[in-house]
Image 1 (cartoon, rainbow, N blue to C red):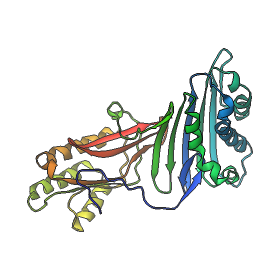
Image 2: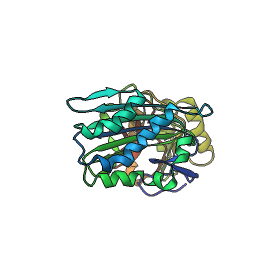
Image 3: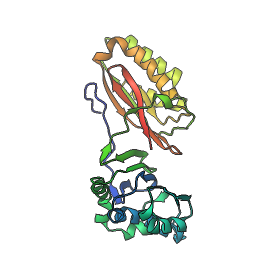
Image 4: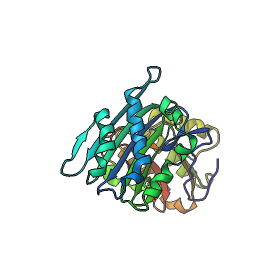
Amino acid sequence: MNFEGNEKIKNEGNSQVYIASPLVFDSGNVSLHEVLEFKEKPLNVKDLQPVLDYYIFFAHNALKKAKEYVYEYSAELTVYGQKGYTTSDLNEIIKGIKNDISTSDGFKIVSNYDGAHVIPFFEELSLNAKKDFHKKLEKIGETERFTYRYFEFSYKHGLGYVGKFKNGEWISVEEMPITDSLDKDLTWYNWNIEIDIVFDFDTYFDIVDELHDAVRKKLPDEVVESCMDVWNDGEPGRVCSGEWNVLKLSEVQDYLDEINSILESIRDCCAVSIDGKWFCMDYPFGVASVIWTDDGFKIVGAFM
């Protein structure tokens, strides 16, 4: 276990990964949700063709998917303008991308995929084509104004991400304040969360006792048992350990607020380690995590 003063430690693991356009997928089933939107008429539709072909590829192969592969795909195309329309019919989406985007005042493509990453149409894509997807977006972003958003989740490893590209640049969104969303009933899944605090346990033994009381009072039984196992192994600073699913993120922040209150007098003497995230697996698709700040622990995150 490594500690870096008051900085949060990120650990995404070193598992083998496989490339699949447009993202890097861990092996196993994945959930991938994307939105590509041009609110204005594209300057040059031909430049967009590599990206548009990607969504045509998804829709085309979903229509002819092989029975031996189990996956789900849905999409929605909205064409802006005088002759604008919205459709979720995959055949109409293919036709619309090929024929209507070039004369539109803008468009939006919503793409939703759930299943194994090793499916026929990923195998047909060359490795370079897969790796170049983000580079193509960046190149298009040099001249076009558009937004690309995605939520990706790997079921095998319990890891996921939210990303956003807007008007020529990637925007870091995962550590944004989400105070307004803490009380929303969304159901947040967590595969494993570990929070460790290190300070002079011998000197501040009373604070150790208060932290342990907070763990027993606030956390689910399974998480408490996991924390107690860590304590018995000689690490009394573990204040969260294991799988902790919640309906509202306010449940997490309420617990963190109690921990912050206990640590207030020695906060500057603490080193912390945090590993794990929560995922909202349905619309609006989100990621949340815990960070360590000058004021203590805080929930942050982002929605697609």
